[in-house]
Length: 365
Figure 1 (spheres, rainbow, N blue to C red):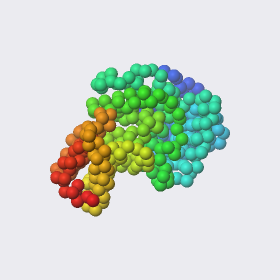
Figure 2 (figure 1 turned 90 degrees about the vertical axis):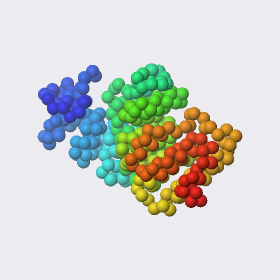
Figure 3 (figure 1 turned 120 degrees about the vertical axis):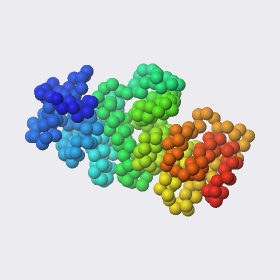
Figure 4 (figure 1 turned 180 degrees about the vertical axis):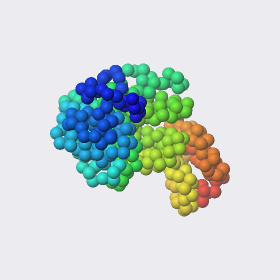
């Protein structure tokens, strides 16, 4: 038996008995498709279903163009009462943006939106809502935290492929104003209180260095469109610790496209990341000071507003100690001191009065 990943196995089963609700997916037919063997129409359908239910394998199979044509043929007849149709569309969209076929991808947006509206009319669930309160109870240590994950294959596949789309830097290239609100998504109608608790639990996981679990939890918030700007900064904070600079830059750029009507303190967090990248890339001093100047104006204005109460409420403090520790061997001592002081001043506006000891701060207009 050949193992491709934890969810796909291959043996001699017949196509009629490939799927079981309580077992992994078994398929000899996909093995033969991978080898380039000719398949019957029924077998092609079976192979495609397995592919869209396993986006990770679909992406790394090395046969993206074959899968694109595979999906296009299947979508010639659209089944608006079948939740798998949406997976075909999202998978096709993802493969097109990854193949630099922007115009084709953008043409799919209205089709995806229309399909989701039809699903709503027919009462078709794509990502099943998690009902149990145990996933949304705030906890203060990592042991009891349960990462909310749907148990059915369809919901998991939707979350996987949508997450891959949202992570893709190619989204930024579709148009200058394309953001995550431009992407039609299934509606996850969770009460705000549950999502706030979920965010708290994601932070608990981050604090305890359970980064994959934290990302999975933040992911549900992102798909729910819960404070997208701030949620993207949480992604950036964790990906920095995982040494994924490209992803951090993608999240920061995407967050900047969700900046409208966001609180000043969250915009300062975004600018902090931009300043870090300016330092990391040894950018021109003029560019670096432009970022510092923008931050300085905003921070002084915040200080003036909060003079009488110089402690920012707990809910908006920005915990970055693990990240500052991570940066110790990546920046100079002076750069790290400056970034640390900026975090303090973002969290406690009174600290702005201590910033004049830094040359960049004094030079910034």
